Length: 347
Image (cartoon, rainbow, N blue to C red; front, side):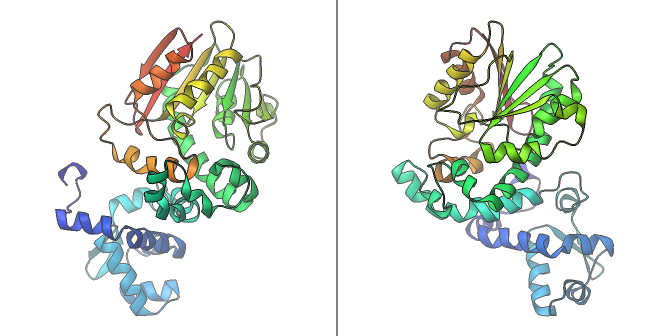
């Protein structure tokens, strides 16, 4: 696997695939027990020290340390286990990109449904949704009846969106925009950041009622609170808010089929004035349909759980859907990093 830079031969790579659930649970257990922080705070631990700090016996501590080392998350130096560089960057709470919220949502929301991937492929629908009780035929509607899971889900979405959104802001300037609608704005992370950055900007977050309640509770700054508004509604059944000159269609495209995206983008087109812009920003696959890994591994979630019809599409497919929705000027910005692409359509 030379492209990864990690010393895994073919046999070990296949072992990670076959024993993937075990690998994930080794990681999740280490995070739950705070093992990586204990190791960092003590400049490494031997088996006895890890057992003592974790409050477990030495044999299970040994099993955990060996498993994490085999996954290249720990190194061993002078008889003590230390965090590998990628662990320090991404698995410490103080690291530059802590992945804890992603692990939580995988464990509690996504992984239980993945046992139904094969049946979802056969039936072309989200069979895995049966693991989330509640109303409706999408994960997002079911989560309205599961407040604890909804909090976990949007904590991860907010964390991931915040990091990807910073990249979007490097490529698109909203200085001349007066009012933007954030479709499916989740916990308000993007809308709040926009209002902070652009003091002239009014922001309307459009999402389900239980989600907009989460978002509204997050704003502490009165100057920002006065310019971030929340409109509860259903993207398919309810009209979009009027009066905006831009619509953000962020991390929505991958949820739906191409046909359904065209339908929703036409709704955005109708809501915008002449000269208004629709900004489509999502994970994107490569044009060959062979990856990257982020696209290949997240697409089964959309099929098996989220909606039963979505996946990660290429930038050119996103751009074509924007054209098919009626936007006359379409600009495509592929390969922005974080496996994202931006498509801007102007009415």
